[in-house]
Length: 429
Image 1 (cartoon, rainbow, N blue to C red):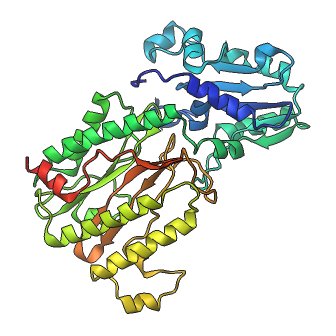
Image 2 (image 1 turned 45 degrees about the vertical axis):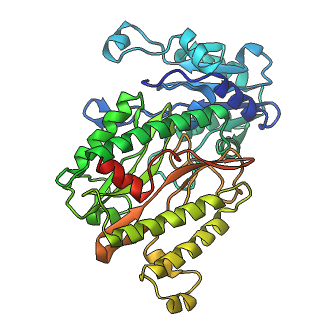
Image 3 (image 1 turned 90 degrees about the horizontal axis):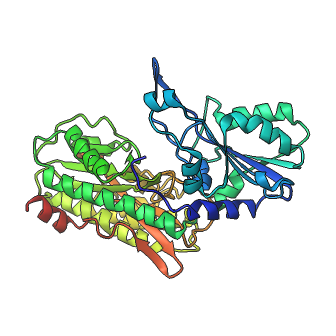
């Protein structure tokens, strides 16, 4: 890992919070992510299962965590299983955790090699009444290939058919959205790296640069500051590319008079930033571009004020839609009389602002959280309104990351330039 060690108290506390919510006499199993083939004899760069990392702090493949707080043998109440390294692996793949390093990273005292898992697990599982299995219940996710947790569930049901099987995901959905101080600090670190990359881009962009050159500037700054890399595939959309919501080709030349939509964020210690800015290729917005930009910024400012504890997801988005509608009328994109007659189920503003305003942020960019759970202190959410005008080849989106506290919210990207005047000033400095 490129990032500096994370305080193991984060993972120790996360495990305590998890086991306090499981049924009596239960055992829980968490698996690291699969390694996915890329081509030939290559695999994609490994990305840890966020729930496994949340509870263990272990950022390595072929690992298993077992939690059994009422285990009759106290030695097995918290157990971590790791792939045993050897000289061959060290030469071909590099360093892997030693047991001592794993104890320091996780706060788990009992660490064994993966080869010992079957015997140890079988020696304790029959004393438990319930087995908690972790599955991916993010409602944005669908799968066609069974992932590791599901395959292991099938094996366990064959071996232990009379146990009661329970869902860990319902507990994780409750725990993960509420960020601890350590998690907030890691997210701030990711936001700070993202800020520096954006400022670097502002000083780099001019007519004639390619979108991929801008992407290269971003990843340079990320890696230079120990980020793992991009939190997600970056969007560098110039001109009409900016109206494609998930444009990631990043292969066009940026022309004078265009606006570039930049949607990127750093990943640091598995925690993510998610920022969007829109900047003029020539260093100055045209009047029309500036009018649209300022409208989006006003919507973002108003929406940010509504991201508070107790806010309800759907009601929040409906209110943002009303604000956006007024701005679109002011820009001449919607007719107020047509708006008065619109179908409430199909509001007209969605022609120019077709996506949601916010999502939870954390170990996943679209973090695991309850869609129907009111916002609460400790949540980190994005705020990302946009206006996309196909007929003008203009797309503008702005996005910051907002932490909710008991005293209101805190903009974790407040130090990243967003006012049009400041952006133009840096670009022309």
